[in-house]
Length: 306
Length: 306
Image (tube, rainbow over all chains, first blue to last red; front, top):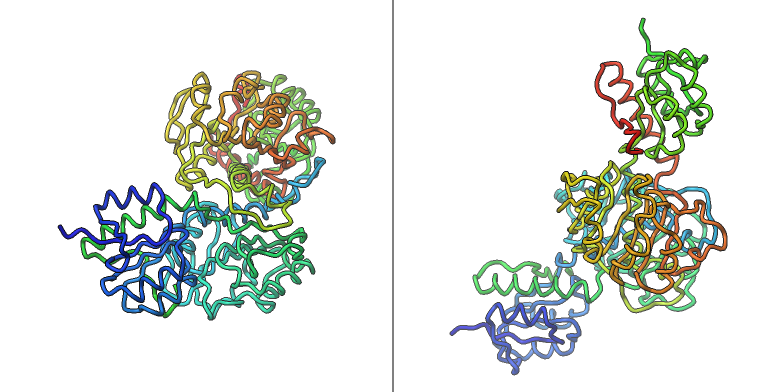
């Protein structure tokens, strides 16, 4: 009789609807009587903020993405609620995209795509390279796992020095500058917070070797775009592959569009089609946990910003 | 004092020279007195055939590549010798290239390389796809291992039905036609023999779905190039990534150069720089085995053609 009263903020889709049906919850039309809010793709901050501000029954909000910055207003309005994000849920496709971009740069695929004639063999093997992964969330740890499939040496850079699972070593952000000169592939997989904004600026770029490449599948604001653009144009690093940019979308005419050492993908690491089943699985898991009084997966640390 | 008398056919390089020195063999200038011949990169079939035909002391020949077709004359002249190829030695870089090409097609990187404007996110994740790997040698098994890192379902197609390590299932070449309609990614990693030449022709291409992609890192002759070119132009498969072509080099002006669904790399899966240390390691291993009377690694089955 105590079926959980759930509000859906945004547009439901078949896999999510099936997960909610299997969990035997009641979907409420009157959002203010909801105990839990599932924010799905297309759900807006304004809609959620209104619900969170006005509902006296709400206890838990599930957000649909790993980053929470889009919903900061609602979070600030109701810090007393349980907040969960999708962090960790989309690790597979995002880490896979990081690998795709890494291999594309190492194997010089941008040059091959536009070639109209055979050429001497060239390229670099990922095997044996030194990888530095910034971040230690679900995506970062999945990148570590995939990188270790290619016999690489992996350093994880995180806020704390607690060992990141699967890495050869874990260092703190304060040691980033020591790691950069020994890095062949720098992969950014950190949350965007005031502390991480522009963490890769001209200073950090100058510490990378000319053979190094950068891959960003997290948030564009982690990199000082102007500094990176200048660094690439000056041929001081071998390449940069960016699935996220600052500004985003990258405007038409931006010099990165025609920089031969830059490979831009339009925030396509995890498409809606890829993440819909993964979000539905996360919702199912957390509905089960909520019903059993277990700790929810993907709890938001509002102070840390993720 | 019974130091092995070794002839070097081709140009030695530092890692090979170091391996030979560590093995304490004698490098003989008069090749006809050699007991073993190490054919290295640049060694010619003519040079080897002359040595093999005329030496009465020769017992073992180590070839530098996985494919042996370039040295068929010498093999035919002296089938009584022990012949070893580098099969299995270059699995890491070649399998890595197969993954790079697979991910590049799935993630639509050829389109991204030439884009000059942001676009909607699109692409396919490798996770969960059905992979068919043709071949079961060292490269094929390494491809299986890497593919399994991405939670794929892997079918190996080989001459015999003996289970291929790591695959979800192993089928014989006679069952290839049954597997093709259930294939998302077809990876060719078989030797080129009279039995495998043109094994992917118009008939096999027609059995693949429109969403399927083909990756060839083995030998161009495995595919009927004309049939593939027509099939791509008709938009009947999603893409083909070819590190090897027939003819090779792919001639200027060939329609595959401008086919947007084709990605051509110039036999760059294992560059000389990548394989030099791996060949030196294989030579060191086999010199040790030869000295100890152990079975050599990479023994050539001249009748099978690899």
